[in-house]
Length: 431
Image (cartoon, rainbow, N blue to C red; front, side, top):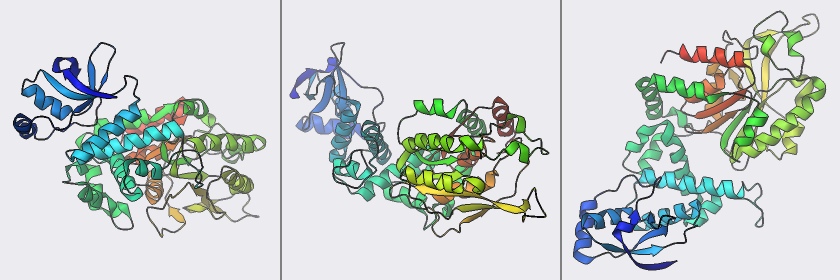
């Protein structure tokens, strides 16, 4: 790394930089005309003999407007990585205090995501533990963990609720999305989500269609980077010979891919191994299961993969129950799911009871969970802007619920029939 004067005509602005708002270039131009350039720009050489700007594009623009022929520049190695470029750009602009807050939080998130991809998530608090965490990102940027966590949360929410970008500063934006104990009590967020849906319903529907991927989760998930999702909702085959139990319903059973009881344990182990890789360091995993006969199996598997979970699950309470042996067993009207967490994950609706209600909707899928039920469940665990993974998409109702609550979700399923019926449902949504 060295500093020297380089020709202005040799410099080209880079693509994909974090800065999009260059502020008052006219004032900077006047200052540079009066006292010259105080801080050099930062560049790296490119293969075509030119230089790409890493930091200082605003000064370069002012110098270009002043018709300077050359400018002072710090020249970095040509092979500098994307992460180092982003860190330099962030530090440079934070020190100069001319960075738009939206650009700042997005760049911080980019840096954190790149470090997570490079090092993986830290799963232990030991000093010599491998991996990366929010604490490392905060130390790297010289800020508190709370501030960096807040900024990254804001960056996540910007795509889902772009209206918050209109706030004058980060503090005001965060107040809009924070609420009190329950983030979803914020009327501003609810209004913004509804306004976005009404503003462009075709865009919403296209996103919903694109979020349902036809394919084998185990194969498709290999394409996904580690530690990408805030919440993973697993509603797998139950391993209870569902076809026999629902033989009289006829609803979508011919397309249902059941897992045999004998194969259930190894199947769930494979599912959790992949989801363990994809979940963020402070994420939630929701796991639906049949208590008879698999409750202990699921619980032990979650513990095997070091999830924080207790034996008492949460329940979907249905208005009506069913039993195949009414003379022997009470009709069952509950369906359980374990909620397991990583790291410092915390409930967004603290104090919520362990039961959720929802009336079954007419569906093309035999085990569909109602959209309203899934809205309530998702918003209990994660924020607006969170990323959701649904390994077994089925009816697609979780994908719809997530999008309606301002979250980003993707799901996978093997059935062309289920996906085509889901698309019909999406097209019929009245927004």
